[in-house]
Length: 67
Image (cartoon, rainbow, N blue to C red):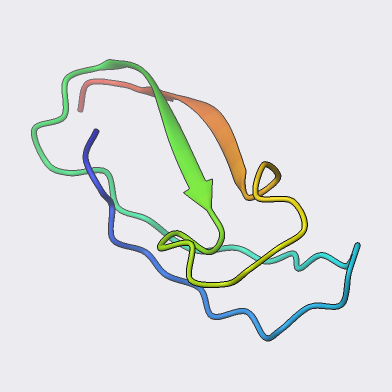
């Protein structure tokens, strides 16, 4: 996995609340064409105690094409 390094600040959320938004990322130069997954994870360092730690990850499949 290659960290893309993007971070989006989100304020504290009430139980069952969610935050929507977008975060631009840059695919590294030289990435081979193919299908990849971008994975987003909230509370990445697991620093917050939560009732459920299983709902913090979302992924999206993308297609990278040759330039």
